[in-house]
Image 1 (cartoon, helix red, strand yellow):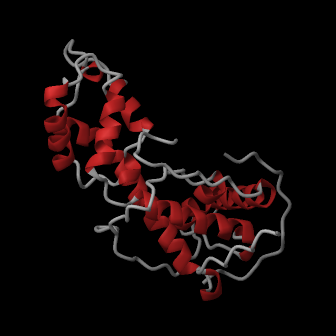
Image 2 (cartoon, helix red, strand yellow):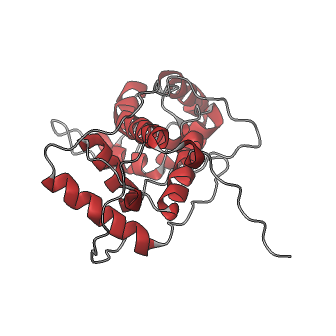
Image 3 (cartoon, helix red, strand yellow):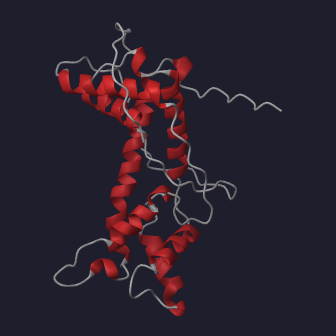
Length: 240
């Protein structure tokens, strides 16, 4: 549960912050109003730096996303949007054992947390072979030896088989750039060549681990909230 509120302090405001090649893409959610969130983030960041003996939050440790729900044909694979700086600050405070007060989690931040959790749920869906094929097609434009028409399907199947444990949200444009920006290895231009399945999995794995880490942080933070705040309230209907 959240720690009791302390006397409010004033803090200067700070500024807060793709769709990848998928068969279908969703729409990224805009960041919530920054005034309240940045003030909370600044407060939390300062306490992380100064509190070395803070009381830890009573947090839960749910099981990691070892299995994800299979998306339905009508569920688009949305590009993953990383958490805002305000959410990052709360996650860092939680990891450092800094007790959160109500001022640290204003309504805007709770709404952003729910939106982020929904984005993670979609990003952690299992990747499909069609999604991998679309991603590889774009990679083919960035390397000098893409497979020809007679071998493209078998190459895609091999990569899909080896990389099937990499969730859909990790297959973004950043991962393609991570492959192509590799420095030469013993004079061999690795990033300019078509990858083997295992080489590509090595590049994709850090992106998958980031998703899983963010999901664990979101679940732990949600579990620490009062029960009335753990469920996303229904969005108001737009005026006719």
